[in-house]
Length: 242
Image (cartoon, rainbow, N blue to C red):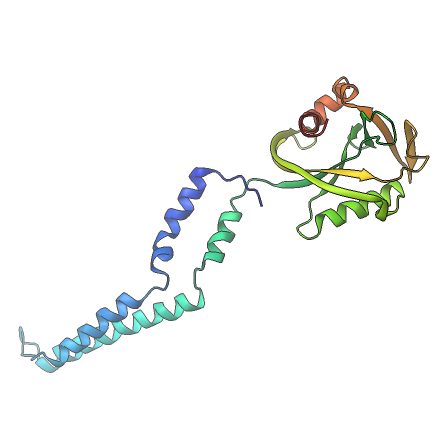
């Protein structure tokens, strides 16, 4: 898994946790201090001091020893119950991850032509823009999920589809919709279709109310809306697949 973490934030986390990372379980040193202190009491002779009876002084000393030892035991029990493991450290580091959006790009070319040079895009009405197929990245069986989604959208048997991983890229970009900067992790996949239905081979077509169109990279780069909304992704695909 690829992460994007601010170095200063990571250093602050490690500084905050360095003591418990180093010591592992807290309290052993306190218990040892208390035990040695109590052992020393067995070898000590108490005498009256400043008018205070030696029995009172001895009682106070024993109470201190018991309290210190008891506090050390309490710290050990607390550490064992809330043990700071490497799993917890990893979880805290992962929470620093600034990648907030993980998507898988599924690229399909017009391989039914002798010289494939076009890519299949769909039209998103809310964005008023043409996009490559893109799905939220699944942590489990992502490739199988991509195949099933493509199969459902294009009405092509999943057995006639094959997907191969190409690469990934972290892409910070300004969200035109939310007007804020976001960090995306795009996993790039190439989808090979063994047999295209006649409908899908048309220059443009519609399935289940969604419009699709085959476009070259040059056509995408010359489309002002695509450049504005998705130009970085077009460049990414051009570099790795185009």
